[in-house]
Length: 143
Image 1 (cartoon, rainbow, N blue to C red):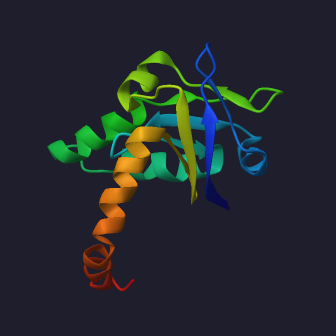
Image 2: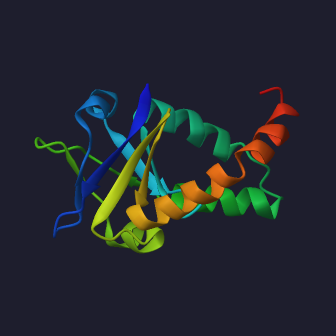
């Protein structure tokens, strides 16, 4: 289970240290891809396979299905954790997510999100400010 919020710095080569408590989940391999809301997603291989199987079953005739599958699959890269617990964030993914020096690594149960620290703070302020409205909308889904 991936939970928690951590702040780490990108090194000069574009690598980020993964929190020790997350490394076991990623020890068999990981996939990093373009996420939503301006972040990156990172999945352990077993979770990635579940998502990828769902993506390839989306209706090919629907443009939104094709667009979402392209975002997630074409942007994906193998993200191996090195012996020092770091992963390389490729240039194109750093550019997409506007990662600078400080990065927030957020555990969201079955995935990790990587956020530029400033962008994360703005996102949190926005969502925390409308948490009651969000909760009401989710109650309609049974949450």
